[in-house]
Figure: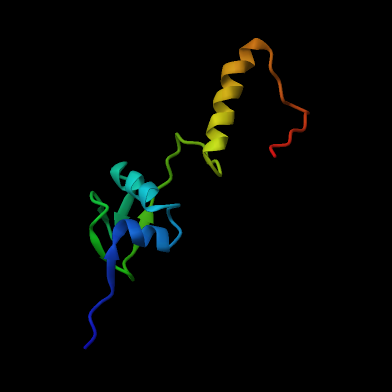
Length: 95
């Protein structure tokens, strides 16, 4: 009889595309945003079955950006907005 396939939780999150990298997976786990079954995970190295139910909860306080660049741009717009910088109705290219 073959054993049940298991792997590290952080690696499994990356394999399932629930995290960008193992480091990102570790951050999600440390923030208490990952549950295996109905139990909140506390360690990235936890061995989980590859068929286990894994849920990553959304952090509503963190806007959904594609990359860190989105966070940087949001910070710049917040910082420079009071000085009269407006981007509404303008086009920009990041090349």
